[in-house]
Image 1 (cartoon, helix red, strand yellow):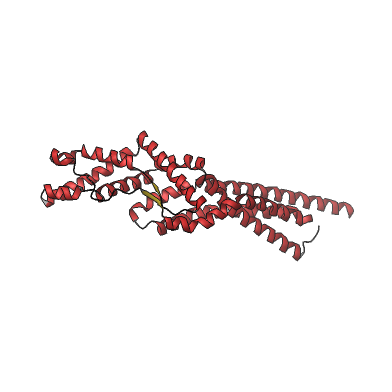
Image 2: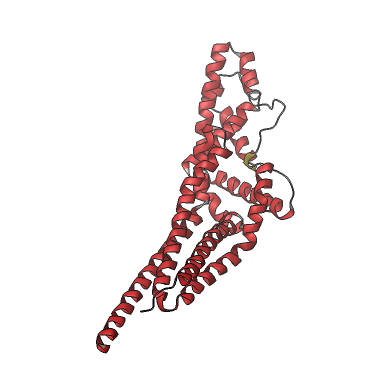
Amino acid sequence: MAVLSPGGRGLGALLLVLGLLCSLVGSVGWWLNHEILSPSGWRSTSPALLADGDVRGAVGRFAVDELFGKTDVEKTLDSLLPTPTAGRLLSQLRARGLDLAGEILTSPRARAVWETANAQAHHELLSILDHGRSGNVALDLTPLLRELTRELLDSVPASLVPTAERHQLFGLSGSHPDNLPIFSARQVRQARPAVQTLRGLTLALGTAAVALFCAAILAAREWRARALVGVGACLIAAGALLFLTRELLVPVLVHGLVHNNTFRSGVQAAWLISTTELRTTGMWLSILGVAAVLLGATASRVSRSTYSAHKGGVA
């Protein structure tokens, strides 16, 4: 059998490492293009977000916070009732609002509003990325806030307020409730160069990964079975790194991007759902890697057996 020279080992290792890097970065780019930046991909992802309990809880809390923070409910109650009674009623209304928000968000109408708002926000994100405009990306959930207001006005706690003043409870106090923020203008601006680069290089990186792995096998000559095992190990490593990136990096990103602890569990759940394709890609890379390792190991054993039989026959 041929002995692998140091130069051959160095070239093979270099090709394998470059192939690993290209497959890893290319996989991230493929996920961005296929799940996050593709309109059809996001249409299939957005319903799964609202189906998650943590996401619904965060959206419901945001809606209630906006409704109570941007309207005259507290001021109206204080003007109508003694302070202790007004405080208790405000707490009851807020608790009932959270319950109602949870119920509303499971309705078919809420799903339709959610999907429409997501489609609009996704279009806005692509417009900012493609045309370099500046702006926030947010979900317009105004129809759900209106429905929440109607339900709260018909609730038991609100019935304790005289009818004449009841409809003043949620009058605007000067600023309209905000849309649900997804990305700030600064975050989009900072991410735009890297996202645009990945979008443009995804196909090239995937092609380069295949070419580099093939080159590593072809350059191996008499030790191609071992090179195939190396390719498999690189694919397994790429898959494992994608898994680790998803599991370890998402909590760090959420902690850095979301400053309100109340919403972190919902945002983290949303990110994990949005990176499902990244996990799937890692799984397939690992499966391909295991297959390559098994094939290379089998070929290596056959080669050794053939070499031993040939050597014994010559002797």
